[in-house]
Length: 345
Picture (cartoon, rainbow, N blue to C red):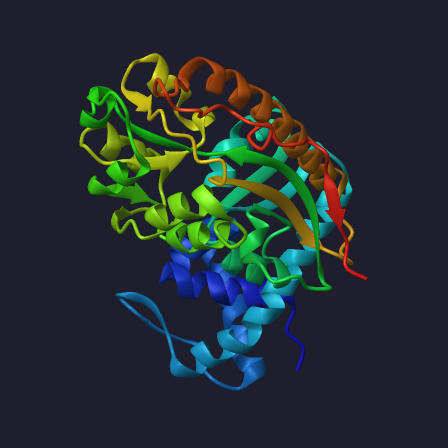
């Protein structure tokens, strides 16, 4: 018995479309030709794959078992086709990027813009998820690269990292927030208001305090115990909730620069130097990337450096410490742009 990938794909398409007519349009072949092809597959496997009727084509239990076994073959074939297309260069092929919510919003828009060109066959897909889930998909070769906070990921020999700059986050509220009316804001005042941030933020904040001492450790404990009112993995939703309530969020100034210009959001005059993170571009160590993937990585790294410069300028403009406080933007907020490549032995 011999069944090729084309026939497996035909069976899968009929099953997903629920009928031969719709599947034929998707596959760009005639309905009679598709019907004959499926009948030939059924003859060779020795059982019926579909029940035909007025309602269309319903896959049988045996057909489902067939597709479960053949699904891996289709995935391998699709991966091979994509790899071959990527090898051809920058003007054709698919690229799948996994991105954490903050990393994706901070870097990918500007980094991917140069690849949007007329008469190109490039297709770039961005998948947003938690870093550990993205690494799992990277290992399954469902993603080509991942851009995320590497602190969530255990070091492993099969994943290499290009570590980028540190980015400072600030406490953000709506314009006219009650805290802004206070002459002096203490860190202890802030947790009295609702917190809106990502679902994984509390765990990440806990990590940030591991090596703090003195006043910074005391400030960190207050923020660490701050319960989330709304946990949402959407930067747009976070900004919208904060702009229409007395909630507080933590975010990079680059992500709210337009809202600051429109006087919709404001920066609390309290600086937490430990409230910063960095991102990394991660890839499988022994996987050869296409020219397109390499070019996208270089563009992401370049955008990371530009984002850091913009954040410094925004901090100088919008962060105004309370009188009597010693808050300023220290060297820790002006993180180095030196990139460290971690390639496991």
